[in-house]
Image 1 (cartoon, rainbow, N blue to C red):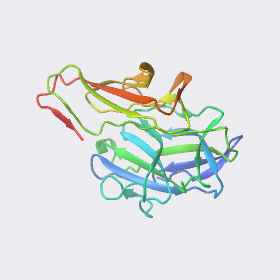
Image 2 (cartoon, rainbow, N blue to C red):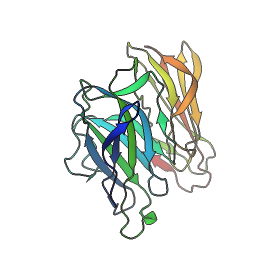
Image 3 (spheres, rainbow, N blue to C red):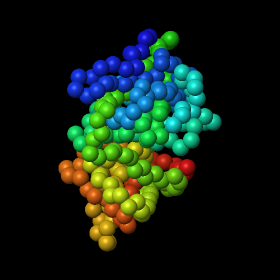
Length: 263
């Protein structure tokens, strides 16, 4: 199998960049494979669209990282254990799962890469959960097509990630909650225009809130077994210095005979 070219023109948007697996074949369940692409322009460029090229039949999820340097110089590498996606801190730019559709940012928003952003490479991580879906000798080119522009938009996009790193889901319990929160202590306001949730087998629903002066406002709520896209809000919500961000993950462990330990 031959994968598509890395870069090609995109009418009205500057250019498109393919970040796709270079004809790989996972060898075991829960393989995490990464591949890196050097951003072709030294000047600041901006990602405005993310178009997935994958199927949940073979791919559990994909993450796109922005890196100063990739975790390896190989065409692709195992990035689930010792070698991560980046040398140094990774920046998550995009996440995909469960056959989510394309993500198109608002007209005045873009993810800055290259230039002075510190992001010189884009690294795609693909989690292959079900290798039985691959036919004999079948290779994979899952990945993303990115639409990129060179003109700076008025607003820069970013992702604020909230994660529960540990917790216990008691066996037999119909509704078990795991709660997390943090204070937003950055002087520059953030404007939430979309949200995305992610969890595994036992999860029912995930909700996120902004808490300001004791008032709770819903940022977003979704079932993680729906297509895991970035769902747009009806209107943007400002998140300002001193606000608290809180989230609740609700799990159903009625069918479980032993406790589920996270982390």
